[in-house]
Every structure is written in C-alpha cells, then in structure tokens.
Length: 285
Image 1 (cartoon, helix red, strand yellow):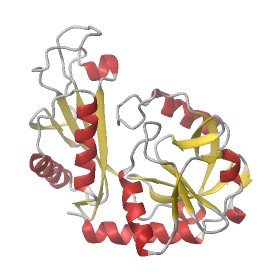
Image 2 (tube, rainbow, N blue to C red):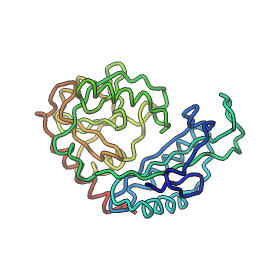
Image 3 (cartoon, rainbow, N blue to C red):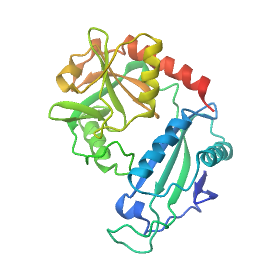
C-alpha cells in the first residue's frame, strides 16, 4: 500500500479519490511530470519544476504550489514510501467544475493535484547492456507535443503496435523525419562522431534528461547538431539512443529490423549513460 499526495493531503492509495467530473478525466485537461529518484534524492528537480510551470502556463491552469512546497511534498512521499530508486509522478488538472462542458470553468477553480511514487530500477536497467529495438511509426499527435499533457493515448497505441511488431518501442516520424520516441527523446551519432538531436520546437517534448545530456556533451568534447534527421539516416547511423527520466540514456541496437552500429550499444551512448548517472548521483537533492 502506497502513500500518495492528493489536494494537500497524504493518503493511502486506497483512500485517494478524484471526482468523475474532473477535467483531467473527461478531457485530459491536465499536465504531468516524472522526476527520477536515486538514493532517495531527486534528480534535476529544478528543471522538472520549471517545465511543469511552462506546461501549466501554456494551458492556463493555475499554478497553486510553489517550488519549495513541491520539494517538501516530494521528500515526504519519498520518506513515507521508503523509496530509494524510482520515480515520482505528478499530475495537475484544471479541476472539478461539477459538470461537463467544453468551455473552461471559472479560473478560480482549484486544480486537482496528485502525486505518487513508483519503484523502478534506473541505474541497473538490463536493457542498457544490450540496447533496445525500435520501429518507426507515423506521428499523428496534436501539434503541441512540447506541452507535457496527459494526452498519451496515441503514444500508448504506438507502444502497443511496436510490441506487436516484436520491437521494444517506437520512434515517431513525420514525412520521413524522426520527431521523438513515444515517451523519450531520440538521438543518433553519425559516422563522423556528431551527435544529432531534433531541435526544441512544438513537435517534441523539451526533455529534461535531454537538457542534462547536452550539458554533458560539452564536458566530453562531443559535437552536437540540433536538426531533424530522417529514418534512413537513423538506420545508417553509427549509434542511436533515447533519453528520458525513466530510462536515462538507453542505447538502441536495432531500427526497423536493421542493426545499428553492429547491433550493440555504442561507445558514445555507453559513456553518456554512465556520465549521466554519475552527474545525477552527485547533483540529486
């Protein structure tokens, strides 16, 4: 039994209840964040909270809880659930207006705020040793993928389609160009050793782990190009990998059935994964 946070209270998960009229339930009118926990401490907390604020502002949802309050709430959840390694999921919806309407309710309506912990092995992920397999599928999401909303049905559908095709996950593409993964940012390393990642625009989520990775590139003299790359360029790349709060840096060993870089995790992805873990353990709060 877990302790969760709901609208200012810490409750057991069995006692937590949200109204069926909540707009997060009826309209996916809500945003979320996922923060990694290592050694009972929070990884890149400030950047996650900054992105949460941007998402709330983009949807005109009231931002009722300040950063210092979130820090106290998250630490209390870690303590109450004795979480050493895993994730904290946070969701904020526009709230419960008491009925269903496409029009937004009074802006003074308090948002529904919910958070819970999830145990997950992050540093010792078996997939990091062999890499994951990817298939590319059409990106048919709405045009604001940069807002971290709970509209995740299409991503879930593409994960299931990838699984049905015998792959671990999917990268989404528009007109032959890769945007991102279903729940991760996508990256490749060219045969000349340049790391290529999609630029930050409205077609991808502005990944917190991606941002930390970019900072690490400068320390390790790895050249960076922020530009779209094609499916065929990814298939022919020296390396490919993904980044997210739940996977850190994870190598891709196969795209659309074709081995990438010999079908084994490449040196850049392997080095960046360990560099990220070292950085996260040092900087977590």
